[in-house]
Length: 134
Image (cartoon, rainbow, N blue to C red; front, side):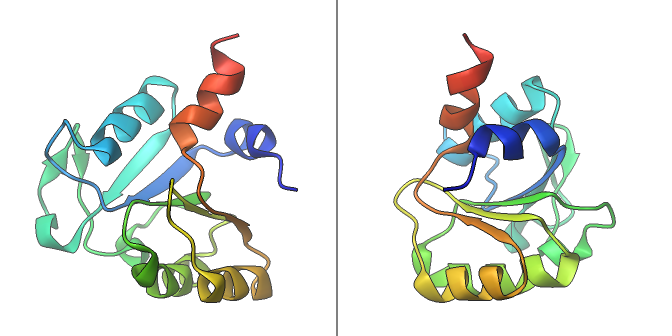
């Protein structure tokens, strides 16, 4: 069992894959929340590369981010998680975090084979709310 509180209190840089400029989308709501609590969020969306979301430059892929990435936070369909897991390995991320209803056994195998913690079907915002708002 992975301790999400420990992960979220020791991590600072998050690559948010599937970022959207539509501020009503779940990924944007979560990004704004993460920023509010001091996380540096790097939005990743190949269709928006070079644009800005919530004040941050948008990257086409995780490997374009120059800063160290602690968590790769995934808001994409489960079938895209394998390629995202491979990118997480390339950048040396500590955690591959698949949001609610996102699961992929092959992505899990890739992450675990490379000593990356794997979390699936959990929301970073909900997990933070469990310990911050107490």
